[in-house]
Amino acid sequence: MSILDDFLRVSKARPCPVCGRPDWCLLDRSNPDDPAVVICQRVESPDIFGEAGFFHRLHGSNRTKARPFLFRPRYVGLSSGSTDLGELAAKYVKAMPSARLKRLESELCVTGRSLERLRVGWDGEGSTFPMSDAKGVVIGIRRRLLDGRKFSVKGGHEGLFLPRDVDASGHLLICEGPTDTAAILDLDLQALGRPSCSGGVRLMGRYLQVHRPATLSVLADRGEHGQRGAEKLAVAMRALCKDVRLITPPEGIGDAREWTRAGATAHDVLRAVEQAEPLALTVETVKGGQS
Image (cartoon, rainbow, N blue to C red; front, side, top):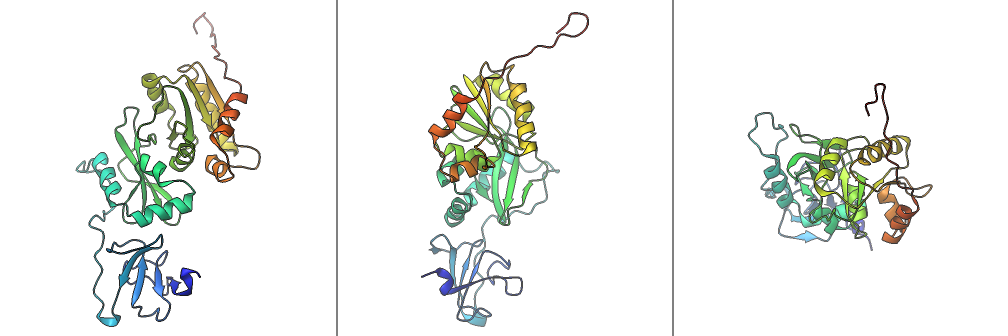
């Protein structure tokens, strides 16, 4: 028996009467135009209906308004300098409903444990992931809306997705984005994320100057841009780490998250690392004998 036997998805023509949005929420199928019961993904209630969302019992035209999230920010950016990004990210973490975290686990096929290590939060409209500098100071926040679109909180900067308790002293994997990083963390490997296929090169350099891993592997997406960006990062990091390797998921698999969804284990990833040739350090000599 499916939950959709008793509930109907909201739509633009029939939005959620609790949050007012046209997606994700569920209406009592027996009377969707004036439902007695609603399951809302965005507005809290004392009752959680499994992974579907928050259970709200309404009473026809005399329904009372449900209590919204205590923290529902407006996206006005940080140009005034009045909001600290670290504090904002911490508020988002506290605002993450357990039902939304479970839904995110299901959508992304990663564990809540790894998402929590990346300090995933909820801003009232989408999931949030803080981006940090090489010292772990939050300098930006990535937003992932319910429809999959990605933005950043205004006033911040691109940074690294640094999980809690990452041990960068041994073998460290560099992934693209927070969700690929979460997938590799699920394999009990040490990983952090760069902001995009071409971003974060300077920040990674500063990070390596502090942490100095024994081995560094850059995990590239299989697309052309992912390959080019990963190669550029790997070459730049070779001056800071003696053993740098470039690895790619097997043929037909686009990125790290697809790889783990296809059944990849830590052994599979480490075998790819072992089979990859360490990058050679090249020194170019310019005219005049300077290098």
